Structure formats: C-alpha cells, structure tokens
Length: 277
Image 1 (cartoon, rainbow, N blue to C red):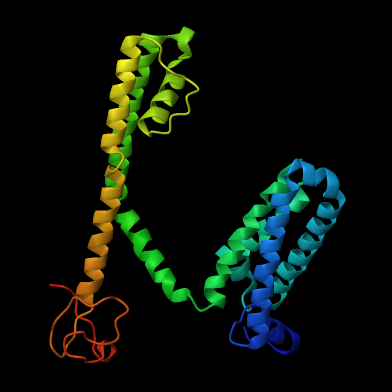
Image 2 (spheres, one colour):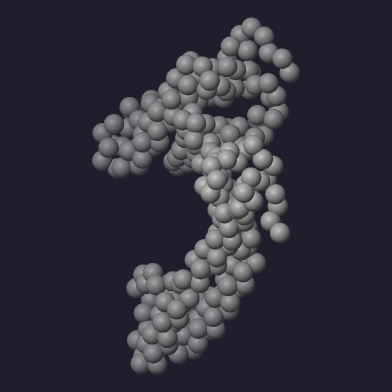
C-alpha cells in the first residue's frame, strides 16, 4: 500500500531509522519507556508512594496517554495496519498501555506496566544491532534441537522428586511439616535444585539421611541440562562453519560472519556456499 502526504511522513519517522527524525524519535521513545518503568518501580515503594502518590499517578497517566497516542498513530500510518496490529511489536505496544486502563477495574494491574520494558527491544533496530539477533537465533535453534533430551531429563527428575517426596511424607509425616505428598514433593524439588528455603526440614535421622541423598543427587544432575544445550550449541556452530566453504581453495571452517577466507584471502560472498558432505 503506497502512502502519501502526512501518513508517509509519519511512517518514515515512526517506523524508519534511516532518517535523523526517525532515529531521534526511537531514541526518545526508548528513554520514555525506561522512565515509565522506573516510575512504576518507585511507585511500589511504600514510603515514596505515600509522599509522592499524586505525582506518580499524574506521571503514570501522562506516559499512558503518550503511548496511547503513539500506538494509534502507528496504526494510522502503518503500510499494512492488520500486519502491524498482530505483529510482535504491535502486541507489545498494546500491552504497554492496557495495564493503566485495567487498573481502573482491577486494583494493582498498573504494576503490569513493567511489560513496557519489552519495547526497549527496538534498540536492536535503532542502533543497527540486528546482526546480533542471528546469535540469538543460533541459541534458539540449539534449544529446539535439544528439546527431546531436555524433556526426557526433566521427566526423570520429576519421577525422582515424586518418589523421594512420597518417602519423606512416610518417614517425617505431618508433625514435621510434611503435611501431604504434594508438599513433600515441593520440599524435594527445593532440595534437589539446591535452593534450600528451609521452610520445611526433616527432623528424624532417617529423614536427614534421605535429605542428604537428595542433595547429592541434586549436585550430580544439576549440570546435565547445561551439557545437553552446550553439545547442541557446539553442533550448530560446527554446522555453520562447515557451510562457509571457500570455492577457491575448497576449505571450510569459517565463522558465519566471515567475509574473507582465512586460508587464501578470497572473498567468501563471491562464491555460492556448498552444503556439508
């Protein structure tokens, strides 16, 4: 859809970063978002809320009005309005203003305005850091490839927690805080993850022995998911390096962002990448 006049100018400023006006708008927006989030945090401090409650309330609605106007303006000047509204940033922009209006009905909903912090993700586009998103995609692919292993691992841990929780319920019983099997399972999870809140503790020698075994099991398995993800990450890195093959010397092993062959010096983008054998 071709834009003309005011809509075209607004689109260049709000959605673009190639012009000084567009860049300045995004930088101003990011600072405004950060200030609004800091305001929400300060308003949650009781002493400050009592002293400056009216000022916080006024500033909160000032930022809400500002973001509402910005959101409606984005819809007005977007090339494809439906695409923007249902895009990731469109949904985040809407969620950034909803809490204030929900607070008129539900008490405390205004604290959800910290979701505005997600809008700061636009800084990747403003500061031309989009190339770093490829590294995030690499990590996400690694996690996705390891999903079955992680699922099997956590299923095994859950089975262990249920067994140990049930045993602790039988050994310690309600008089020592283990009032039910679900609460005993909660204690097992807290113990096996080495968090140790201390709200429930075993008192009998047998219970303490079982607790010691649970702690040791926790230390022995805590590194397993890290190893799974690391192995998949190394595999993805190796696959990317294998794809970056120089057709001049035929050697692979280049980083994904390499522009020149590290063996012969030829420019890699001059050649079509060959798939790994």
